Picture 1 (cartoon, rainbow, N blue to C red):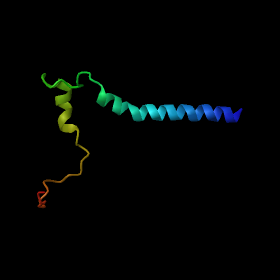
Picture 2 (cartoon, one colour):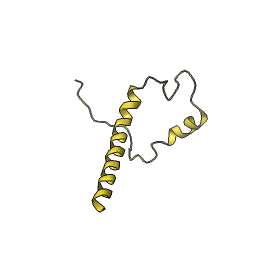
Picture 3 (cartoon, rainbow, N blue to C red):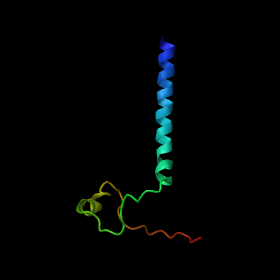
Amino acid sequence: MPRKSNVILVTGLVAFVGAGLAFPFYMASSRTKPVIDTSKPLPPQATFRGPYINTGSRDVGPDHRKYPKN
């Protein structure tokens, strides 16, 4: 009995992980309309949330180092 339940559990876990890994590929390949319509303005909730997305950042200012252009 324990062996049968282990097989069922492993099968379920493999199916769940497979679906989770396949989902981004499915969403990228689907030909549906985009999630955000760029022809319309952002909703008020999105414009209100915008400035607060990076509140946990530890950035203290601009980076003064010079980076070579490739």
